[in-house]
Image 1 (cartoon, rainbow, N blue to C red):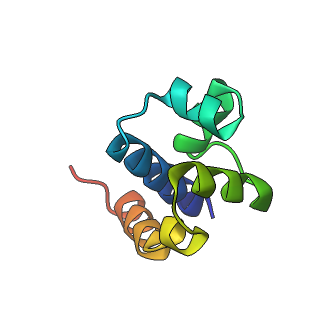
Image 2 (cartoon, rainbow, N blue to C red; image 1 turned 30 degrees about the vertical axis):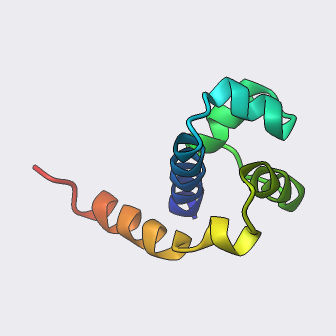
Amino acid sequence: MQEFLLALGQRVRELRLKKRWSQEAFADIVGVHRTWMGAVERGESNVSFTNLVLISRALGITLSQMLSGLEKGADALKATSRNPAK
């Protein structure tokens, strides 16, 4: 299941960078501490539903838009971890 947290973190980072927000500025917009946001983007924090809503609203997108493609991303991460490049 860790690969889903990693994929979510990558998606949040990708969407934040499209807005050209620093991690600290984005954390302020969401209303969370910057170290927690960093943990989310690194896939180290299991995000609650409430926080998913806060993040998607801050990005100006729906939950479904934010989570779109997450399963494929997680599957790719899982495949990569099984067969790391040599």
